Image 1 (cartoon, rainbow, N blue to C red):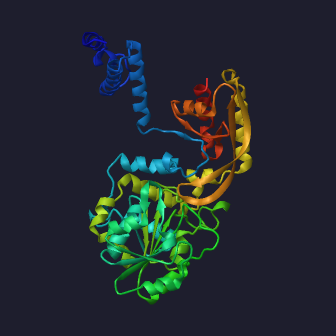
Image 2: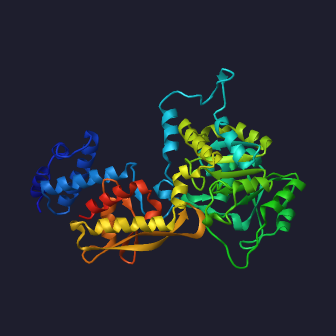
Image 3: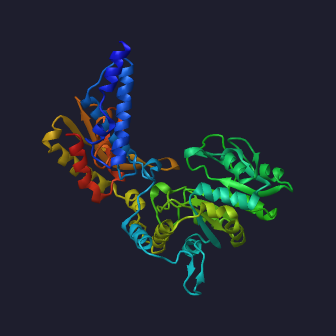
Amino acid sequence: MSEGDLGSRLRALPSIDRVASRLDGPHPVAVAAATSAVELARAEVNAGGSTTFEQVLEAAREALERGEQKRLQRVLNATGVIVHTNLGRVPLGPAQLDAVGEIAGAYSNLEYDLSKGRRGDRYGHASTPLKLLTGAEAAVVVNNCAAAVLLTLAAVASGREVIVGRGELIEIGGGFRIPDILETSGARLVEVGTTNRTRLADYERAISQETAALLKVHPSNYRMVGFTESVELKALAKLGRARRLPVLFDLGSGLLEDYAKAPWTRGEPTVLGAIAERADIVTFSGDKLLGGPQSGIIAGRADLVAVIARHPLIRALRVDKMVLAALEKTLECYLNNDSSELPLWRMAGAAEAELEARARNLAQALEGQPSLAGCKVEVQETRAVAGGGTLPGTEVASWGVALASETTSAARMHHLLRRARIPVIGRVEDDRLIIDLRTILPEDDALLRSLVTSALT
């Protein structure tokens, strides 16, 4: 192709303004999508290819759709993973959302003491219910559990040694590694024991004048079986008291004993149990098995919590009024022994018979849609999981619907559901699309049926 021919073909490409004018959406967004499409067309022409205005316009529409899918939006979780980190952990319920709306939509006493008429403490709002629920002397809230661990180590052990069993040097999602957190906090890691076996004597031998704390970490996202041994919290806490060293326990998942019972949580350590076994500081998440907003909670001895709350780093890790409002309401539900107000425990506690009945209703409704005539719909018993780095290997009996088609792959059907006006996220097994109802609230059944029908038409 001559330079003249190339130049004329490039000049023939539509302008960005012309393409943007044919797109729906805010003007800056439309211009960005049009720019991307025109640049792709220009590259195609430079490579010796050709394109039409309709092709450029279609590419711009696809770019616009990709941009819309990247914005934060609601989805229906039909994966059967109850605490789904990629989908926002767990939803908040009406009571929690009402509390957030009331506080977010007005001024509040976030840092104002109403009784004294002067500046107050934002961290005090959640501390009283946390003390009542956990038995801790004091508590403070930061923006997630990783922050809680980092802040605790920085306040208690910066510049000194922290002893950790090798089998507890865990990594969780997002690259959170205990050795890295220790290094960032300024503390020095001292590893004891082996990967699979650590004894109390290993901790005793490692204690020196430089030791600031003993750290125990709950391996909440994996299980070690076979020839293994680890030190129980009670024994480690006794050693800590004898040697005048604080014992820090990163519990992670935040299960509260006796408030949200479920058969599949048996064996999971609880916050109440950790405090009762004399851990000096316990750190845990507010948005895993607690069922609240993203937050990290530090609970334990009042003198240590006071030191942690005075550390300069806490201002960079603090929570806002909306998180505190949702967390307070979450804790109130537990105090009132009404954890059924929390979507986490509504989903986790749903009876198998109820899920089966809902699955049969969904299957019957889908089978009656003429547009899905080529799709085989079956009611299926499934296995849900806790997820979110909690209760590894634990499965929960569930029910759902399996979709299969001779003309459309399960992966393609899943793609279409992810492009619905409210995306539906399921899972693909043996070239069948599984919609697990354990993680769909009953009030969303009609919406789910509508979305599946329209997406697969």
